[in-house]
Image 1: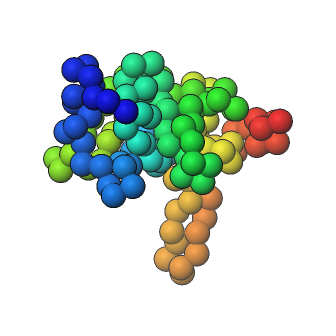
Image 2: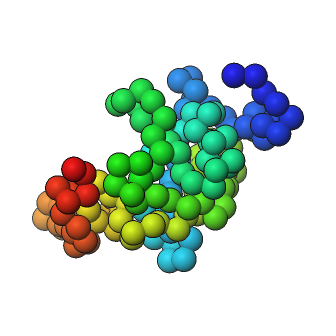
Length: 133
């Protein structure tokens, strides 16, 4: 992919050796951390152009428009990078209030307990069988 003048800002990103950068999606209104994913150059450029989160699926080896199956699109309000330019933060509006494929608001729904186990502390808002037909 050739770099155009409008995409030069992508050169400031410190991509890993596979051409990816880690991305945190944070709900703009509440500050809740919704999910973690990866982007390649094309995903980040298309996210900026469309105003909706588009990630790179490492398992499927293709671009993944968040909500393409579930309808739970992420409208991007702001794109930030950290001090080392190697992590992207998206401040988003989570359409439908569900970011996780488990039907929860956030993917970070498990809390560590003192005895060494995990407890689900976020409710399932919608059964995944009803989300993914």
